[in-house]
Length: 118
Length: 263
Image (cartoon, rainbow over all chains, first blue to last red; front, side):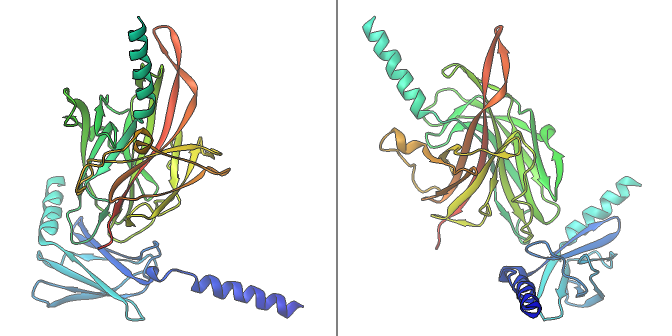
């Protein structure tokens, strides 16, 4: 009796794990510049963070500027490495990836805003 | 005398059927992707959506947006403008706003208009109106109530809808479902991309009517691409004094969604 109960609970747990819609596997990347930093958010469509995943940042000539890793909230930030169009790629452990281009104009605008504040 | 009577009767007949009032908040886009402009423009107006008639809209009492459960007041960003249908002689006040999307997620814009005096119905009208704009792939927030006196909570995700999709929602009044609420539905004839003006063959086609179930849940399948307005009306438990007389208030929970043809 007890084992039947255990199996039932286990099936519910497994069903819940697999019940997430496939749409939710798509990684999203968003980045913005603020206070001299580039801030990255990586998330699934339903809002869950893309945790502990590799981040690569390229300039407009495809040169790798830096690498990093998202934290448990799917966040990663770094000092603005270059005033340029930055391509930010996030790749999670199963190979799903996506990228975001943070435009040079946005980086310039954030620098100008910072100067304005000082 | 008889003629005047008849004219008045006909007038009343048509005003009671033809004029479903809808407050509308129509954004320039309902889905903002990473490769698009992140600046949204919004039209805030009071209209008969299918007939394309405008009514005067005073400056709303409040206009804002809810994003990640945070309310941002945007009332100060409203700028007045004028609008009219091709067959209206006079132009009426409408409102425009611009909003820069900064972060991913669902943005639910809302408006609480100033009470509108409707002499034909001898009441005031306040339509609490919402519309949702999704930004940058994060589909989160659209199903949360924002705490208006009355509001529609979408049960269908309110963006990325195909023509003929079913839209389901729940009508809330003071946070509680409204059993068997009557919901009026209209197509916005001036939707961007509407290839031809829709003309109703007779009055009942203008405003579609569906009733909610015992839990305040309603459904409607939208047969054309463009913007669709859903309006659930209740009577407020308060009144407004006009000329020394207490007048009832019709409060509406209005929600707008956009459909796109499958191509």
